Length: 187
Image (tube, rainbow, N blue to C red; front, side, top):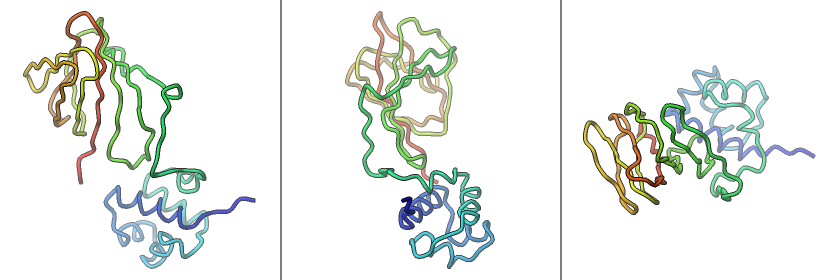
């Protein structure tokens, strides 16, 4: 028998709403219902029609299924090495990215393991809206950041605004592994 946990649905709605900076009143207004109803939904005090949840999902740009998923653990995410997948960032860049934690879509932090191959083509620096923390796990890289060149070796770290042009390039004749943590800026 399928049982819907109203408290979990409410927590997920609240998490989505807060991550996007909406007050209860603002979201309720967008959806066309009262703040009181939204408050009851978020607190698990009332069951909602799928149409009501669908309106909320649309205005939060979130799949309805995310609110209804069972067996989610929002507090612990285990990612065994054998179950993670790597993907090529882009042909031009040549980085290999491995997502280390499949967190909630509303998490403000995304850790990835970046492999910088020796034969990586030289390309233009890029930008992104997140702040970035890097830790050189193995090897050595050249970090070009906002026009300056920095050599970082195993154990070195850097923290920087992704909004400035930057790129990691190989240094020497061995690939490097870089733990990169993207942090979404506060609104």
